Image (cartoon, rainbow over all chains, first blue to last red; front, side, top):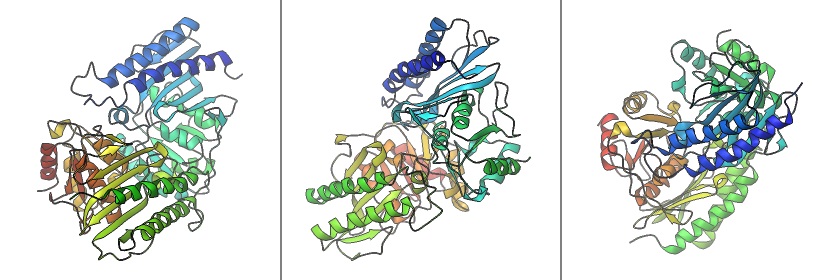
Length: 257
Length: 257
């Protein structure tokens, strides 16, 4: 099994190119919301995705593509790329350097390769089925955490939990050691590198979560939906990632299982 | 008036030294909470503050010092240094690179010099009364924001607002364009550099806010308590910083004035 080396190689080259665009539009000092269409974040988002799509189309024309900025292409293909050119748009817009470019490759709807690229940090996590996750080429590993009440939890913002999800998250949040906010996809990289024990989020798009699971799993962690099921292209956008099995299980319980 | 060059020079050299300690203990891959006294964050916090104190004592023995880790020294002096060796401890502990070292100098209890040093980002903001704020030696400026509902707001976490403060903050948060969390002192640097319009926080210690005001004010911004009064050593830990006067005034109204 595993993922062909040339697919990963394409992803790496595409993210290198996308970095030029995202960094070139980062901290340009304009209040980016006054002109939505011509704002640096919109330009960076579209241009980065366009570059990645073009490279995929040129090298693997039979692959499908699902991206945040443009329409789906050939998504019944065996291999489908899932792209989020800028994850953490609100961070990007406010000069916070933790935004990321997310590139995933799904086979039969299941993510088998994922990359979290943090251009402003010059950090890139790569996770592929059957191989250890790396950060800038070096293998990384989740850390052990004995109990849920010792766990450091991340979520992008409490505002992502609505209705029943809010109650579930509060139930989890009050059971952990500490809840931190505001790291977007970067939190999953920190988890893969053994600095964070738990990430729990909701209201994510397919683009947001597909790349994260291979990174977390390849580092020895677990990442599922709130029912404990493996993530795929049809998952509902509620995810929980953990470094330890027992913390993951205890988190699912707090979320209502 | 102004701040003597040799005071600022000392702060810069002290922060250089403190960086070695904080970065040397950052992302060391240990779950830092298992042994509180010997944890990397505790070591870094104490050692960084000790280094800065020693340099102040050696060069300006008549100055006072108020630091987070050790007791107050000579705080009735005309000049008093206020130190937070690691602001954003929860970020530090989880590998998030936005933590900062805060160094302020107060004269008669009022902050006349402040520095936000972000070691893992290699970014340092310096603000001194009567001179423009710099980031890595380059002058920075806040950005204009026409209205509160166009403003991008930061706060470290919603959990810092308790009781009446929570209601006030929610009143503000629902009136802005978007609320982001999780940047600690770094958010004030982003505001000074013109990427963020508003930062509102509560439950801060004297160590947390004293260094921030000179940075924000020297960049053309405004930073006060929730009543609109200038910050000093006795302020109550509820602060609001803005790039524009009208946004600051509108924020104070939402907070209950």
